[in-house]
Image (cartoon, rainbow, N blue to C red):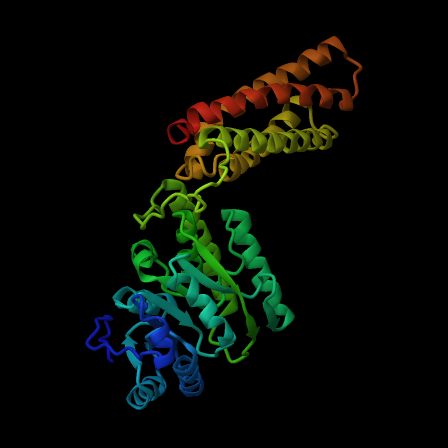
Length: 425
């Protein structure tokens, strides 16, 4: 199987599973799998990777499969080695690209693939191949849309230096902090997707390099796709082509770009939808109707967030009051907690009722609530100071907290009936 530099397929060759596996799947159509290995100047590592992977697939994978080596404009003998392997081993193909970039290679090959499931892994095989079948199986069954190997999920085992460990944990923590992501490991080179849901996402991806993984996962999660995580065994290979500093800089730029894309609503793509959950048992005792259950969830979340916000504002006000006058201390503390409160309610309270509401709309719509809250709480504190000129900062803080509770009730009504009204109803 060969490709042109533009990624167009000129041949196709899947290797069928063993007869025993094939007979087990005879009752239903067996999905096909294409595994992509992006490489750049990997003439040393490529033969061992392809031979090892080929043997495992031939002996263990119960789905028709093929391997594609995606050469990212290598300047050594990588392309020649890949072509020799393709001639020697059935089910191995090569695509050559004229430009570098792992993201570019995956977008090109995955976008042209006619397999039902596409996979990619790093050429160093740092991720243990025992995780390959658990990665593919949830996609083959239709249970999940994407699957990722995770070095940070419970049960994962890694062998790597403290520097890589620290950078990985910081980066994934930053993704969760800035985007509310629920996946644990964005950059592990071990991922798979159902082609049906992947193609719409690829039309929105822009990164050609290492941020492509994170970009794809953020788009998938933003569009409500189900991401399955597989705890993996991972052993660091120090012979790497990754420029850590340059990659980190590009990743930060990419996170900012994705935040703007999601906030503008442009990150939404028409992905295949799943049916709503339904009880399998004919005599199941179901929960209350969705509207009542949703309201109970919203009230519970909003109260919990409101309590935390009120306590946080009171604490921040009390700290700032030691340096600033009441009006300024209240302004800063209320501004900070309003932003945090709005984002928490968008991600938790109204997450299921209004998943399409982006950060920009939520914060702009809630901006008027900041003005209301500031006027009410500042007015309450100033009136209290006029009535009790010698009152302590602690007493002022109590008045501020009580007035904030009243504002919180109004805030819930406005968010539910105005900001999220159309989607909630």
